[in-house]
Length: 224
Image (cartoon, rainbow, N blue to C red; front, top):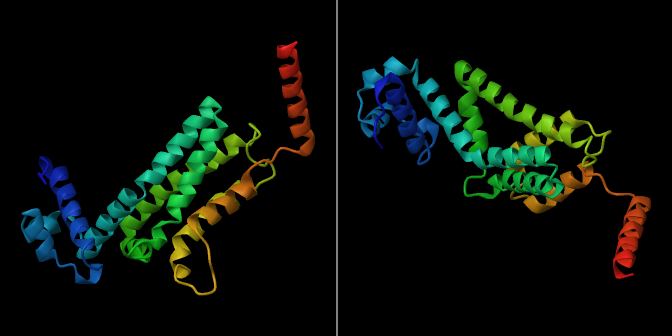
């Protein structure tokens, strides 16, 4: 990895180096001397850019979290574009893909990975404040997307948007508790189906019959 020019590039390089080492070992086993060696900087340089070892670990873990969840943000972007284009099928596909991926993280080799990241991030106040602000932006975007889908008739108008979005996010973070449970059985797909079933507007039988009638009339008209 090439060290960027200037103080900002050096700082970013140190974070990247710490993130690399944290992927190989727990934060309790991370030594600044190892970070300095990998980043090709002196310890004094690390202390110039970071107030403490705790802060460096917190920022590296925050970077790892956003890198890990980047695909989720891409699905959100797809859902937002679908709203603008009035493309309901793409909206629900993006929402479903987001849910399935979010609920797949706990099934990976380290089921507690996200929990560990959050614990390390919360250990440093400055990083915690910045991280929370970033999360709130993402949550607000999902809230806006759900609310925008309501007048389009895609999502139940009486649905509590905040309850849906926050429960989905909070539950996906806590999924590691149940991954190896002998009593609780679920799949990311079943969780997705559950949330979609709660939120999605199901056409009434009357509207379905009306739609079928219109379609049949069109077919008859074309064949006449």
